[in-house]
Image 1 (tube, rainbow, N blue to C red):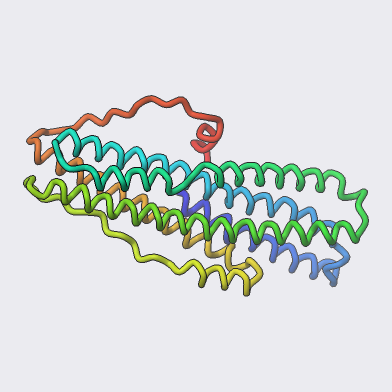
Image 2: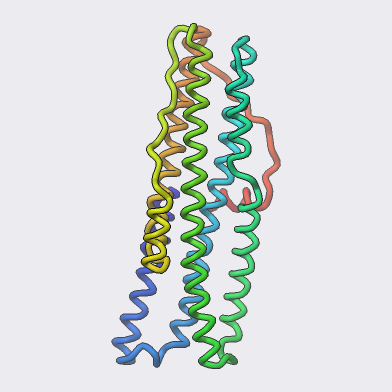
Length: 267
């Protein structure tokens, strides 16, 4: 679902902008005749781009919390089995520090400011001079390009970090249970992407590459989540076989959702 939404945003938004430019050219024979119309269009389309940029950070923030809870639970389980959990505790602490809340709240604040700014520009644009409209339009486009490019790089870096930690953690957990039959495997680490190469392409294309690269970033995140789900199922089946039980009750501690988490359910 998240991939489909991202695909619509990345292909649809630039596609609509290009379509608007072409249709404006055909109708007026020259784009400048409709510069104010295109300015308004840019304002609201850039809000969509900013939203999906923030949404990616929010999705990563939520998943990071789940990763921390997962490795913590496995550490507690291994400790309850009398196993050496020194390495697992160190990796759990590293996972907890893999993504702090600062970037998330910074992304939220910048997104809110950007939306309010664009809405105000949309309301009062008729009172602006052509020079001011030109400046604000270019700033809006530049901000959207830089925002989504930095978000792409940050999310890719963090998800690769979390994937690496989780791979090492599952190996440590598996090693601690080496004397238990059946033998439990570990979660393979995904081959890392070179951030500098993607950053260079973003600079060369003036941020346009970032609009399409977000598809790949979302794919990597989804692949990590899917791989984790598969491993979790393997762990549960391993526990059932080891303890000779037919089922396992999964208990989740009730947690009051904040406003963003409530909104997330409908995104």
